[in-house]
Length: 370
Image (cartoon, rainbow, N blue to C red; front, side, top):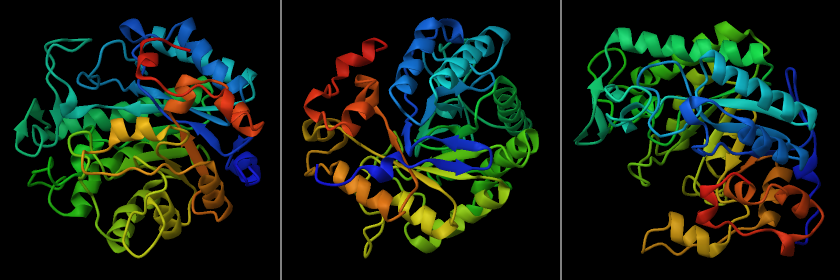
C-alpha cells in the first residue's frame, strides 16, 4: 500500500450518530441463533469486531414480526422478549467497545419455502407470488398483508431505538421482499403497488415513512438496495443516472438518511461514461451520505470463484483505490463483509500495515463464529 489510510479513519457524524471511522461491518447471515435468539456466542462475535476498531456494526439480517419473514434456520428474530433481550446484550457489548450498531431489519418474501421455521406451514409472501420471473412460490400479498408488514418494520425500528441501537438498516436488496416489490420481474401487480416505478416504490416508501414516524426525526435510517438479485446477478432496477434519481428521490423524501448501495465489487462503474460506482452515483444524485460495499479485502481467487461467471475476468481492486474514492467523497462509508467475518482484527492489521498477517477468507469459516 502506498496511500495514506487517513480517510478510512476519519470520524463520521449524522444527527446523533457519531462513528469513530468510516468502516462498517456488512450484514452477513450467520445462522447461529437457535429459535431466533442471539446468545452469548453472538454477543462475543460482534464485540470482537468492535474491540478491533470497526466504526459501525450492521448486524446480520434479523426478521421482523411477520409470519413469513424468515427463510433460513437459526436466523435471529427482532421481536419477542427473549430475542430482544439477546440483542440488548449485543448493543451493550458493542457500545462498551467503542462501536456503534444498527440492526438490519429483514423480510425474505418469496425466498421462503414452506417447511421453514418458525411455522413450517407458512408460505412465502411476495407482491405477485413469484420467487423470480416465471417462477411461482408462495402467495401474492393482500392489502392487509402489506399493512401488516409495514407495521412489523415500524415495531422493529421502535424496539431498536428502545434497546439503544444507534440507528436501523432496512433490507431492501438482493431479491428479498422489498426488492421483489421494486423489481418489475417479480412485481406483476395491477394495483397501486405495481406497474410504474412510482407504484413499485410505494411499499418501500411506506415502510420508511412508518419507521420515521416511529423513531422521530433525528434517528438514523439506512436503506440497503441493489441492482443485482440472488435470483439474477444481471438484474437491474435502473439503467441510467436519470432513472436512478427517479428511484432515489421518493426514498429521501420518505426519510432515508443513508443509502447502502450493494454491489458485488466496489470498484466497478455503474453506468457507461463514468467511473462512479452505484454508491458514488447515489451520493452524487441525492447529496446524502452513502455506504459502498463489495469484495473489500478479498483475494482475486475468491472473487473469481464466488461472483464471476465463466465468461468474466475479475481484477481485484485494493485498499489504495478504496481510499482514493473515500478521499474524493464518492461515498462516505465503506462496508466490509467476508474479510471481517474471517478475521475480526482485519481493520487493525490494515491500519498497522500488517497485511501479511490478515487471514484470507475461506468458505469453511462460515461453519463457526470467530
